[in-house]
Amino acid sequence: MDTTNSEQLFTKAQKLIPGGVNSPVRAFKAVGRHPFFVDRAQGPWIIDEDGNRYVDYVCSWGPGILGHAHPKVIEAVQQVCAKGLTFGAPTAGEVELAELIGACVPDVEMVRLVSSGTEAVMSAVRVARGFTGRDKIIKFAGNYHGHSDGLLVKAGSGLMTQSVPDSAGVPAGYAASTLTAVYNDEESVRSLMEENSGQVAAIVVEPVAANMGVVPPKEGFLEFLRRITKEQGSLLIFDEVITGFRLSLGSASEYTGVHADLYTFGKIVGGGMPLAAYGGRQDIMSCVAPLGAVYQAGTLSGNPVAVMAGITTLKILMEDTGIYERIDRRAAKLEAAFRQTGLCVNRVGSLLSAFFLPGWDGKEGKEIGERKVENYEDACQCDREAFADYFNRMLERGIYVAPSQFEAMFVSDAHSDELIDRTCSAIKESVEECRVV
Ligand SMILES: *Cc1c(COP(=O)(O)O)cnc(C)c1O
Image 1 (cartoon, rainbow, N blue to C red):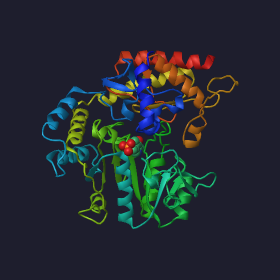
Image 2: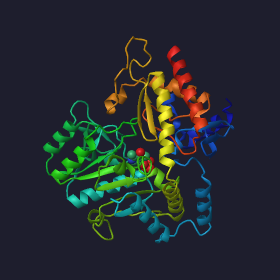
Image 3: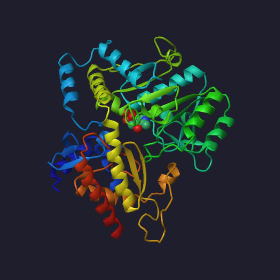
Image 4: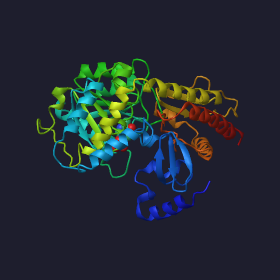
């Protein structure tokens, strides 16, 4: 595999950009190699600066549900560009996108468009605080909600009530109002709610976790969160930045049947452009300025080009009623291939992760058997060296999966059955080779 051009670019990039990348996971640090630089992408393929072609299961970390450069999306974006790139004034497209989001997820009676998932969750949390007049929030270890200060918090060792910043530069004071619970553990939530009675503005959760690898909610867990927030006068925020329009058109709320008060969307809703959204009940969203007292703004919010990419993508998803069945079925084939290798797999719809849990190689005579990944601590048990080995062997076979054990594999509508079959063979061969080493 020739990597000359990517290597040259990475050398130069490292002098100019921290780590050579504009988002850390792109640096491929966890898999012990240098990143490829992308020239272009089409359908299921991503092509690097040296002309290497990979089947892409990262899909820009989620937006690419239709595959890359869908002709209808590209055409609509090109047309709208000709009218000007930004106006800083309202446009018809914003109204249409708000209407489409509400048509898909009826709980979203009112919605605000922003430019990133980070901004969406940060703003939803502010609205929850403004609406309830309370300061504290509860999040879950291993759930990711973007890089705003108050959400870059992890549980302190041992004591779940002691929260510590997950990044340098986050004041301890911010961390203090973010309480961290254990995903899928009702007791951890109940005790935080009791200790902080009357002070919790919201519980924010990934309804299907996809940032510690894919971890489905246990039966009854989301219903429990719904019940306890209602009892305590707190709001429930579903962070659907990944799951929104991915699990179904109605997103995780439809998929799981549980309804939140506020929702955040990103990734797919922007159709590949920098656009995200937060919204929900009208009485809550009425707190947002200029209607209410919660301030939130953006020079490029509701950008017409990004809005057009979002509208076109959502319309394709709404018109093509077979798409979710197709991507689910293809993801199920990949799941089966991983199971044949003996790895632990979690799959929800077209999102899946295989976990290299201790004993995965059978060398110590241990069977993984019924071991499961249900929370962050479980995911952290994984053999990351084995994962890196697997990643590299897949890449050598022309298949690009996320360069981290803690990311999901995304299946798009552009992944043909033939490519899926080829990927299944690559999975079996790669895992088998890792085992022999
Ligand atoms: C990606 C992601 C975010 C952050 O979105 P950005 O657009 O990267 O800021 C927030 N929440 C979840 C669940 C995500 O997966």
